[in-house]
Image 1 (tube, rainbow, N blue to C red):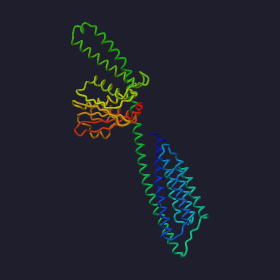
Image 2 (image 1 turned 30 degrees about the horizontal axis):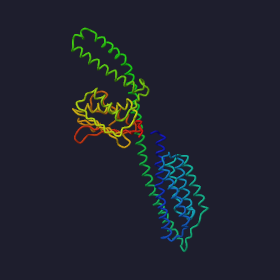
Image 3 (image 1 turned 180 degrees about the horizontal axis):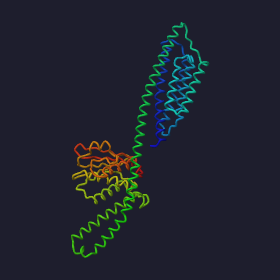
Image 4 (image 1 turned 135 degrees about the vertical axis):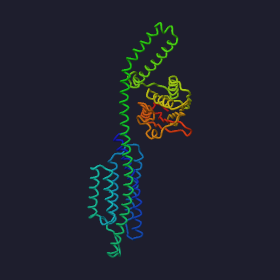
Length: 425
């Protein structure tokens, strides 16, 4: 999520807030009109005032439809909504005494909303509009007909109107400012998350460059060792000694494994083969990844349950396979004799659950799960496996969660959107 996306999200939230405040204002105006007309016996032009309220309701319904649409919301749209509120208030004041109406101070509420929700330019335009409306209402308005009331009674009604205006304005400000404070906290949390992700992604890039450079450097000595081992196979000492010949074969197998790992690093960086992607299926990808890892690591017991149905075509790459193998590696290191991997389909997502019967995650690790070098293993580089898993899954738009099973052992759950894997339902 970049800065533009955050701004658009803030505009959407601001529009939702204005919609909520506008409904409160409509109800407040209805109640105020009823109190003034029925209880205070002040005649009001009900048809005109109710027509303004009806227009305000229609505008708010249109705003609700706009808010529900998926299109981005720009700042001028929020400004237009506030201008509509100013116009509606101006018309209501025109019909009920103009600037002498105690509710004229609600213009200040519009100014405050504009100052908080809009940039300086639009807020200045809104403030100028309210000032012009105030000036015009001093000269152009429909006077209220207050019959048979002496001056003291009129002053009392004015004071009561000011009190109602104060209560309405204070209530709306309380709701508005509380919501704004909540939105600001959410905004700060999103920015903090963006900064954290930027740091982590930079860390991943640096690790990738380091790994690719190391793979290049290791290529030459590994090739040299391979040539030397092939020469040793022709020596009499290895031909005659069966044990030495077996150890030489073991060395050769381990050397080939090192070469495969180096090739995998180069492949994942795009240097060995195009983009390093392979067309396969979900079940085929998981079966191959698990079987390859089982052949390399030979775990004491691996319970594998692939229940993903119906199968779908996807595009896999080395990074995706490393997600699975890293989880299995981590589980094998923690487990004493048994690990399990299960896969299932959850609507439009692939779910993968890896369990072990080890001691489980430390609470401190769970609290910072997915961050680099967060591990209880006392060796250099610990914690990078799960960190890389979390980064790849997040890039694909998925989620990864870690926890401890009630009966003991750790549980890691992945959810990957099938669309991000190139699947076509």
